[in-house]
Length: 317
Image (cartoon, rainbow, N blue to C red; front, side, top):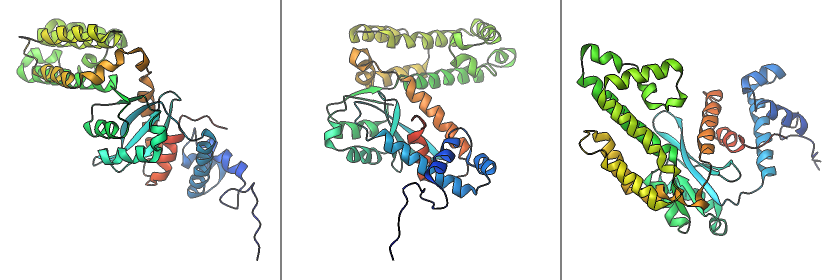
């Protein structure tokens, strides 16, 4: 018995490809549940049709040959369950989602899948200061420069600032505490991002607490490090910043400065003109992935999540 195959049919023979792609496109802006209710379809059917649409988007995008990549991890559920996301920073799209954790072995899966020929084309790898990522990269792409993500570095500084805020809160008592309570967001935000009330609250807090004022000024100053075009001048700036910590009794800042010293090469790489890449894309992608996870809450289909992440920056058709 010969069975004829019709190219216009979707993987589900009850629907055409055109309808499957319509459903997939609707799911780009709506949840599976909403699309299922709108089109009077079962949620599993909508999920399957959307998967077909996303696989077609990947096929049309072609195989990646990245030159500048960004490596990050996302938590897919509670209990430290991570997956690694690798992005092509020049084409501004995720190109790999996988692994079983954020280990060196998991990242090796990406490099092994990419192949030796394409790895030779990678000139820059952007990552956080996670040693397993660096080890895997140095083993498989030894000629690529490593650049530590500015946003991850500043996040470490914000954590150090928050430790100082907490220590001051517990050191003080009575009326002195009221200036600090509830001011975490105010202290960790840039002044220009605060509302009028936020700026007034910040001014009152910094006037009332000399130690927090010093820590805040140092935090704001440190961001200037990425303005330098010369590694020599960037190093002088950092050495002066580190020297200004003397006698300030800011232990968490001292630990942060030591960490920067240990990872200086990967931070100073940003001074080179060929390494000037838009790091904001990685943060924007992370925000987009969080939205995807909220919309997919309760869905245990990891292949669906993988396809959603890999296609979230690709244009619809």
